[in-house]
Image (tube, rainbow, N blue to C red):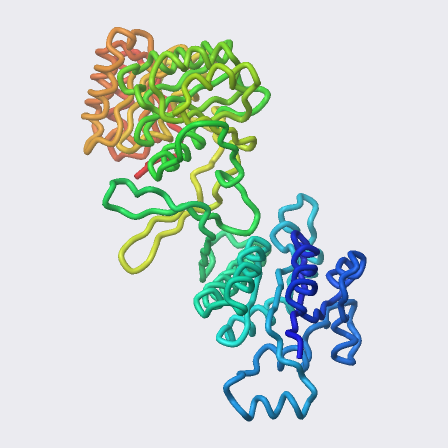
Length: 515
């Protein structure tokens, strides 16, 4: 008797070639459902509809097609158990050797801007996951394929061995279970979001498919890999690498930090912006009249640290800016787009990794950190703040220009490891104190780095001042305006010092610690 294959797929990629090879090269019989059967038949491939095979019609508008004993009996039967074989014979059920199934496009459906709950629910597959799980469970006796990328390997297994190896069937079964795991996670996450709950869910699931095995992690002795959440490439999975060496673990971590900071300056109302980062901390951020001016200002803010850094820009990369970037060694460049002239310039730096990501504001929803025995989840720090929500706490009031500068400094400070102090002028960073154990130390680093540039400059602090010492040292260096969250029991001391020294001080009421 010919071997039997059941094909029922939403993603029709490679379907016709697979079906033709199964029939013409390996003499399989094929049963199939709905749209899959139609595609195969139109391609001239012999196929029996599932409803004809089971003797039971598709009902409920296609909701019930493959949920039938002749289907699941053929999938779940063990070839090594006589009573299973007797049941198959008694019920005229053929054992199924190959199941090819992928699921309704639930994630693609909910990604649509106008999707309704009814549309989403209708794209929750039932028969597909049931067949996937049944086939994966019985992998010792049949093969299950859930991804078109597996088709060529399966056919090669048949050519080389006559039947797929145990190891191949086991690996395909594993892929099937991961596929249903990711699918269920996406559904549960979506339905939880529909509840409009302000709290994080009672259960939090995460599953990913490996995009790339990385050479190593943060250090050469650590293993690492890059995973994509969901079936549809998004975020960095949707980025295009135009040139350069293979991305490393540290590159990807730095690129994400760069994306987050440049996302603060996206929009038609925003001027050209550039950020240069090193080890996830910005070493220079600037706005400019042109993209090249913004980049040159950001680079000059700390040219020593910029060596070997990551550059993020909020505009399509042009040749002039690309030329400026080739004057130093950089690890990666991330831009929303890159014109042909800029690509030609950058090609001279063949090892430089250049990526385009159209949606630099893609967002992450939640952030995760691993801890022993579990993980922590928090919503992303994507709060959009407006200066009109701030409180001016000093006698001296900020000018509109000072408010713009304070907002720029505050946006940058949000992306510096705590304790964080940022000094800026003309919407360019002059000094950054990052990740210090105390705020006084962070302020000292930022002020010393800014040097004489502190005259008439602005200072931002990601947390409140517990004492007035940082206010006094800032004023002594020439700082004229300070933005900080407020909330210390000694706020009055800091305010009094600012009033005494003629410094503007603004409280945001929001803290931006970054650990």
